[in-house]
Image 1: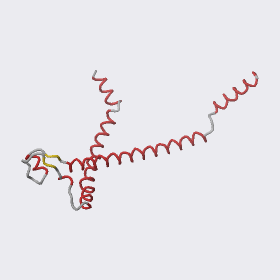
Image 2 (image 1 turned 90 degrees about the vertical axis):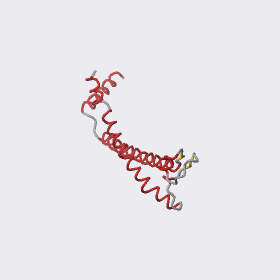
Image 3 (image 1 turned 180 degrees about the vertical axis):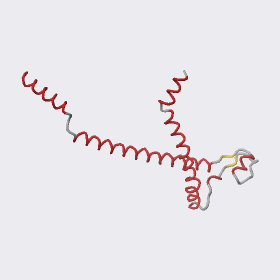
Image 4 (image 1 turned 60 degrees about the vertical axis):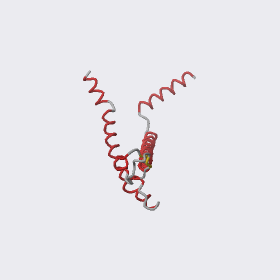
Length: 143
């Protein structure tokens, strides 16, 4: 059973999946920084200096702090600014991945087209030519 698990982990796509998860996590941090450190401040400056990550709606009368982290300690809050930041983050990640997959597909299609052109231009192997000649001779004898 241990050998089967080892074969599964090494020969299967488990290693590829693990690498993809690690790269995805690192890529997620880059996109988080892009959203939180670059895009949201620009949106905030356009909208009059709003910092969306700190906007919330107090759901309890005990909440008096204007800072989200402190307000969460005081009671229930609806952190809509944080949610908006995550929605923008997700949208950016999805868009970048879309562009990445589209680019990879374009490159793959170009490579396959070039390979097909090379195959079409290459003369058929000698064995195929001989077999075609034999087929044609047999067809003439029967006809």
